[in-house]
Image (cartoon, rainbow, N blue to C red):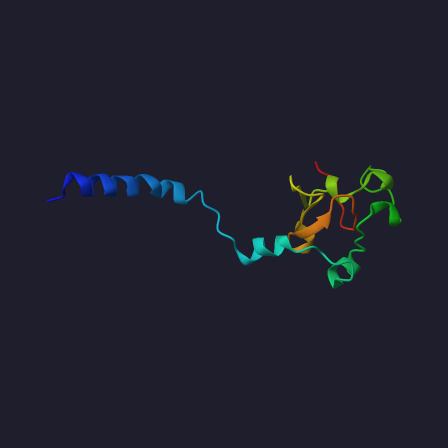
Length: 109
C-alpha cells in the first residue's frame, strides 16, 4: 500500500516530467557556437569572410546594395542578445561578427 507521503513524492516527480522535455542539453553542435570563426579558417577563406564588412569588396546581390550587406541582416545569422557576435549556419553555428560579411550572404526574407 502506498502511503500519503510516498504518493506526494511520486506525484511531484510525475509533475516535473513534462518540464524535462523543455530542458536543452548542450550538444557538440551547440558547444561549437561558443567558438569564434578565425579569419584564417579554411571555410572563412573560401567564403571570403571578414569581420568588418566595409573592408570587403561587396557587389549588389539579390536587390540589396553591397554596402547594406552585413552578417547581422543575413538569413544564416543567429542573433545573440548579449554580444555583437552571433552564430552562423554557414560556419557550423560558430560565432561571426554582426558587422562582418562573407560571400554566402543572403537577405532575410
